[in-house]
Image (cartoon, rainbow over all chains, first blue to last red):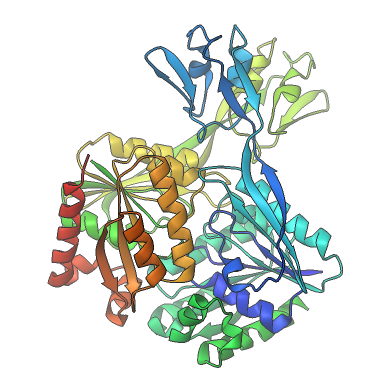
Length: 286
Length: 278
C-alpha cells in the first residue's frame, strides 16, 4: 500500500479540500482523517453505513480521595504539570493538565491518590466501498499522536489490499503531525501564498526532513498572490522539493464543501488544477 | 483583562483578528501561543527582539550510583526508559519530564539536565508588547513553550491578547485557561462551522464569556447564524471576503493600520468585548 499524506503547516490552506478531491480521482479504497483535533473529512466523504466505534483510552488521570487526603500538599509540590490545585485546604486534580505520570500517587503518604483510565476520544471506522478511518479527540486532551497512529493502523488493518491510501493530516508541526508522517511514502504540502503561509511551509518542511520523508508542494489560491507563489516555487527549487502545481481561487470550492460534495464532482478550474496535481503526485509515488 | 482569540479550524483568521485588536488597543501585550506556527510576529514585526530559550528537563543516570534495581524503568508510564548495558537509557522524544524516575530512585543515581525545546521572543510594535512562543521543529509538545509565553505575558499585567493554536486539544486548553473572555473566529463554511462548535463547547465548558467574529464572509452561512442565535452568542463583527483584505493579510499588513474604516470596526469590537467583561 502506498500512503499519501496531505499536510499544510498553516491551517485553512485547503488540505481537506484537496484530500476529498484526490479520494474521488483515485477511487481510493483506504482513507484516513488524522486531524483528530478538528476532523472535517467526514463532511465531504459519503458513507452509507454506521461506523464501528472504538473507545480511545489516553493516559490515565489522577484522582484524589478527598476523604482520605490529609492535606500535606506533597502531591502538588511534586507535580510538574501544575495539575494539582489547592483551594481552602482541599486538593483537586485539573484533569486537562494531568499527564498521568503517577508521581502524585507515589509520593502521597496516605494513598489518597489513584490513577484511573481516561477516555480521551473515540475512533470511527466505516467499511463501505472504501475503508474510512477517523476519530475525534475529547476536548482538551493530549495524546493526539497516539490516536493518530491508531487511526492509521485501523485503516491499514481494515484495507490491507488497497493500493493507495489517502490521509488527511492536521495543521502545525507538533505531536499529531509527527505521528502522521511516520510510515507514509509521500507528504503533499498544500501551501498558502502569503508571508504566514511561507513561514509555516518552511517550518513544516524542516520537520518532514527530520523524519526523512519525501515531500512535494502545491499552492492553493495561487492567484491571490502571484509574488508569494513565485517565492514558494523558488524555495522548492532551492531545496529540491518537487513543485506539483497551482490551484486558482475558485468560488466553487466553498460552495461544494457547503453541499457536502468533493470538488472532484464540480466542473471548474480548481478541479482541473487538482487533477493535474493528483497526476503529478501519482508519478512521484511510483 | 485577558482576551483569548481562537477558532478551532486553522486559517479562519485568528491571527488577523488578534493583531488588529492589539494594534488598536495599543497599551497591550500580544501573546502568540500558536507555537507550532507562530505568525503574529510577521504582522507586528516587533523591534528590539530578545530571545530566551525554553527548556524541559531530561533525566541523566549516574552509572557509578545505579545498582540496577530498575524501579525507574518500571515506574515510567510513558515507556521512555529502557534498561540496557547495565544502565537506564532515556528516549528524549517520549519523556514527559515528570521527574518520577528521580523520585523513585533509592540510590540518588538520577539527576536532570535541561533540554531546549523552543524559545520565547519579546519585542515591541510601537506601544504593543509582542511575545511569541516558538517550538523547535521535531518537538512533539508545545505546552512548555505556551506556558513560558503566557508567563512572560503575565509579567506585565494590563490588557492581554492571546492568539491561540488551532484545534481544541491540550495546547488550546492551556492557552485559554487563564483568559477572561474568548473571542471565537468563525469561517462561514461547513468545515469552519464544525470546528467552531467544538471550540464554543470548550469555552463554555470552562465557563468563559464568548463572542463571535465571522471572517471571509461571502454570504450568511445559515447554520452558523442559527447556532449563534440559539446559544445567545453575540456576533460582534462580520468581515467580508475581499481580494484587497486577502492581499493585505498575505503581505503581513495590519488592516486597521491601513484602512480607517477597519480601524473603527476593530475599535468597536474591542469596546464591545470590554463591555461584556465579567
